[in-house]
Length: 106
Image (cartoon, rainbow, N blue to C red; front, top):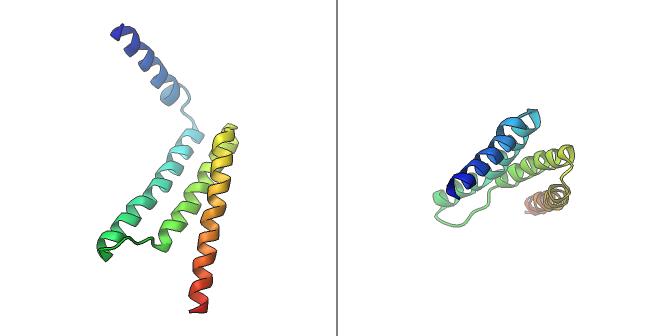
């Protein structure tokens, strides 16, 4: 039973990460890494300020990573990714617009 499970897992991982390896897989991985980098940026900024801080670079990484992931979803025809990233990216852009409006009025 364990052997059958490990063989099935091996075949699955091979199919997902080796057999389907192409430009879009690399692009999708870069998109995910860009998107995840925003949390590292936020953590470093918060540690420096000794307070919870969301720097502008967090929102820019959110937009770039979200758009890259959206492109990946469109190319791969993944409706869940398309819907999720389209809505999320809109929210990130709106947050940047609100921040810039507040900065201009200050």
